[in-house]
Image 1: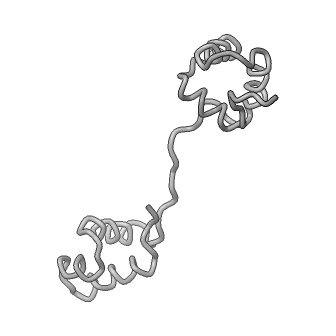
Image 2: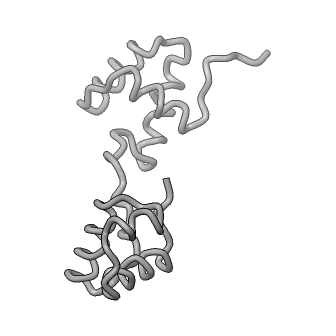
Length: 117
């Protein structure tokens, strides 16, 4: 979901400043009461209403810098199962990965199990 525009945020804060009731602001701008509180708090603490930067999720356990090593593991035994590939990765790097994590990493490097003749 995308953040609300800065224009809407400014109009909500301006409505509070002009003395409009919170319930009236919620109905008029179609935002929640919690959103109004957050905008006021952000305005008070930072002086700005721009959306905060997305901090992202967890870091990938196999990053782009490790893709060449992963390709070497795959090239050494291309017919290995995901579980076997995880074991080989652990033996090479010392990092134990789940099969789901390995599957995502293999998808990132474009490796598929489908063989082309």
